[in-house]
Image 1 (tube, rainbow, N blue to C red):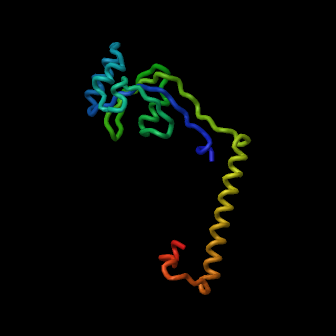
Image 2 (cartoon, rainbow, N blue to C red):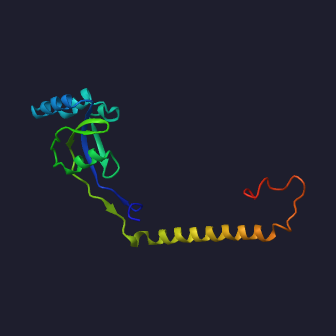
Length: 156
């Protein structure tokens, strides 16, 4: 289960999210003319979670908006994407950090933990089966004092 014992690739980016292509094209031109990307993000981005810090965010591959994910990991360092659309609107992305490759913990380091987890699951399953078998076996001979009977067989 590599996903359980690993970390996806990550990258630090800045992004601007706007509602229209025309505004996105205008912002792209301002970036090309040398306007600070962070300042433009603070002024124009409708992503309230990142606009305040200049659009800066660290994205994890496979854990963000699909179109944004694709663009963020294909850009070269310090490269700015052309505007692109997603279901949220129009985005412009600037890659401000290198791609940090995905990592996986070697099996040798996790083998003991995995074996213990499997043992717990087997033990819990055996205990549950044992209790169910005992309830079934003694159901016809078990008597309760008044007021002590379980409300239903599901809770006993």
